[in-house]
Length: 464
Image (cartoon, rainbow, N blue to C red; front, side):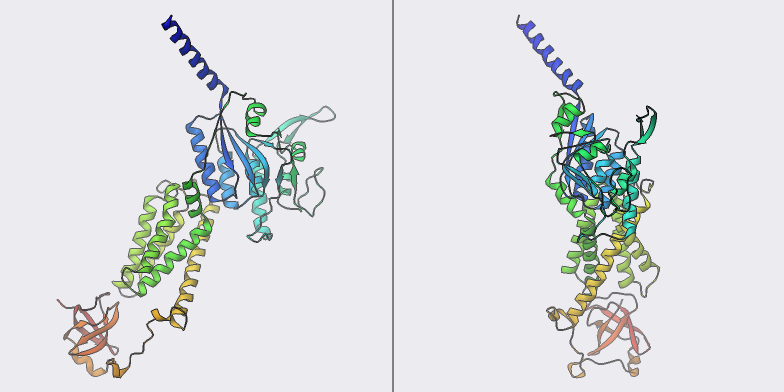
């Protein structure tokens, strides 16, 4: 009897497991914040987790007023290419970028009292941007609506006709008030938005629902036994999402450029170099974690900086080494934002390349502006005047020029009185004289030899 009972328990457990598997699995991903790099990371990680768990359907729990267009474009592209059906449940609002993401889903369900639409592109102050931005958004909305294809319906005369499942004109009217969808809204002065009932009437919503559970169990017909899992955003999602924000990346580039410049002005491991290194780490780390930045791109950045340093301190003039260093540094900053497998760039679009270049250029311009501003403050009577080298080199204090008769020092030995990079001062026969190193950087106190006198200038090299 004991063995029989154990067998019966095992059969019941196995039946329960089979029933759970038959009921299906749904995976819920919350999209309940401003659309941006963090939302994109949450959805991407959620979809990857859903695939690992073998989910039969993914439900995006949406409640957002919109956000960044580039992040929304990445999210809608991921939805359109997802092998698993993706369903949107609009809990309250899917405005602007949220509308684009919702329309990309295979089905849309809305809570009574919800809204979808108002996808006009605006700036940070809420002002409508020029038409070129609206044109790009219109095309994305139209293409996303068209991706769902057409469906056959029977008209009032009993004829079967093909109509868009999601009318592209309606999608465009959500962006531009000049686009009027016949029979929907004839007012060409306002951007189109739908309530739940209006969205259902115009085939932009499959039905009403009060919760995700109702969507899964009733609207999708998966039953009450369906397994529902949910992605829980982590602190790492928030941190990496913040660091990967394009605006913050531009600021990091500004600190990289500013730190490098001021470190070159005052060689030695000081605050500027620490700032530049920290900014570079914060720039590449989230991109590396996201799988965008590859090891070769980080290496290219380091090599580029090394070539720039060699051009400044070792190789006189400005030639191929410096140009190559600048190109490597700039290219690595841009390519780190673009997903690629070694040198396989087939999945990279022109728009993503232009966005990355724009972000890097913005950071470079900010860096130059900060350098000019701080340099002015240092050189004037600002709060940083104490760190300026504003002393005059007076004759009575021991500073002298290089008169022609000092050509007699050619072949003589002395030592570097200051750092030569490549210009500086040497001490020779008790006198402090201006000199230039022929081989780049020479540290203070290094024995030197005067090798030539040219254009009223002594040239030296390290003594053997």
